[in-house]
Every structure is written in structure tokens, then in C-alpha cells.
Image (cartoon, rainbow, N blue to C red):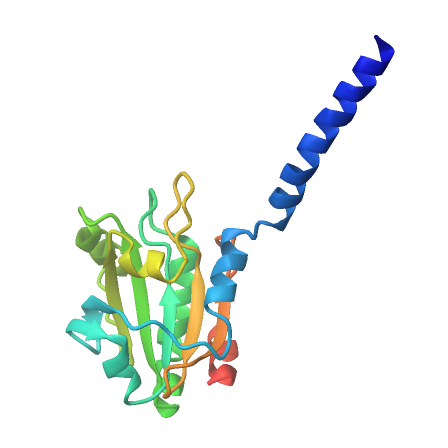
Amino acid sequence: MMKIRQILCCSFALLLAPVTTVLAESPSPVQAAAKQLAKGTQANDFQLHAVAGELSGDVRLSDVNADGPVVLVVLRGYPTKQCPACTAQVGDLIKNAGKFAAKNARLLLVYPGDASQLGMHADDFLHGTTLPAPLTMLLDPGYQFTNAYGLRWNAPRETAYPSTIVVDESGKITFVEISNTHGGRVKSAEILSAL
């Protein structure tokens, strides 16, 4: 009887070993997104609708990028309320808008969420704030962009990983910061030094 127990225990341990190895090797969503958006890779083109700021109508990354570097700032949208860290980050970008313009860079703020009421939530987020050039707010209904870029934070009361991506004139990613927390935001000074 003792030998049967030992054999069963050893067999069970052998069955678990490969599963543990596979689980340990699986990258987190942030690691997977960072790999997809690594420095030197070509940024995937996308088109989203502008609701505020310098640009209007449908905005395509490749069109904007033809004129100079682009900074993509992925906000959290409206998970259940407006994000104070997003508000602070956008305030910092607005305060430094002239410095970005001097570097001929455009800033595209991506506001993701479910398509229903997304425009209303974006208006509420800006609450009368005027976005100066070179900032533009884009809506990401149904997480089209967020999913394509691997930035969907698929957890209760979450939308997207707060992220900042710099794309140079050739369409290559030169800087990327993806946060798996609400507060991990890149300041304007760091973005400006990356341009």
C-alpha cells in the first residue's frame, strides 16, 4: 500500500510540474504589450475620431506622423468614474503644450471605453477644458485601438493600462511606458527628453 501511495504522489507531482512551468513562463498582459510595442518596432496605423483639441474629424496616425513625431497618451477612460491621475496627467501636458509644439510633436490623447456614452464621458472628463495645440483627444469606442495595441486592462472597473508611446517621423516607436497601476504616469519632462 505504501508503494502505491508513493507512486501516486510522484505521478501527481510530475503532472503538476509542466503546468507550473507553463504558468511561470506566461507573460503578464503588460509584459506582452511591452514586447509588442518595443522600441524600434513599427507602430500599427489606426484611425480614431477627434472630439477636442487641434485636430478634428477622423484622425489617422500615419497622416499625423508624416508631419513629425507623435506622442500617444492612453487614458483610462471612464471605468466607473473619471480618473484623477488621468486628469493630473492631461493638466501637465496642457501646461507644457508650448514645449511640445516647439519640438513639432503632436499629442494624441486616447480615451477608451464602451461605445455607448463614450462621447458624454469624454466631455465630462474635459469639463470645459480647452485642449491647446498640439493636443487632440480621440475616442476609442469598443476598445478598437486599445485591443490592437495590447493595452486593454481587462479587469473589473478597468479599461486600459495608462500608457505613453512616442512614435518618430518614420513610424517607429522610440519610447514606451506602460503602467499596471493607476498612478504610474509619465511626466511631460520625460516625454520631452524622449523626443
